[in-house]
Length: 134
Ligand SMILES: [Zn+2]
Image (tube, rainbow, N blue to C red; front, top):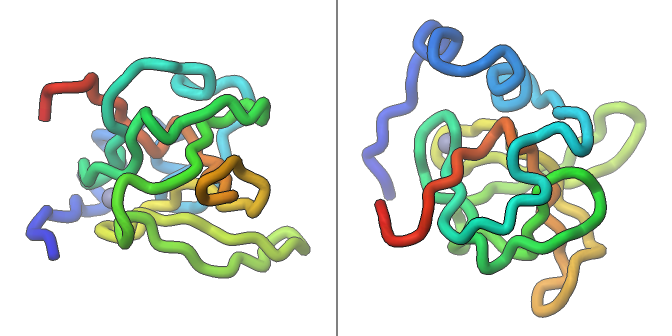
């Protein structure tokens, strides 16, 4: 359980960029190869841009070639919530922040071992923090 405060819509509109708002609140998708983190190899943790919950660690980040930051696992079980998304005529697995419900991206079953999963995330949903600060 967590006691992190989920910001109000007004606060989010002020604090987030329009793209960050669109992605996290309206399940938007940034264009491939345009985000801050798709080819980043910096060590550290990736936090939810909305509520600051840690969601991914750089140890599980890999180059999927997709143009979006990709991870083969969440930082901990239960941090990233998944559900079936039937929008756009496709059946996909949507990933959201389990704490605040922010849309993060989608999960595909073509990732590397040990999980075989590919968390295909939007840079706009994430905030990287360097290792050894938190
Ligand atoms: Zn969140």
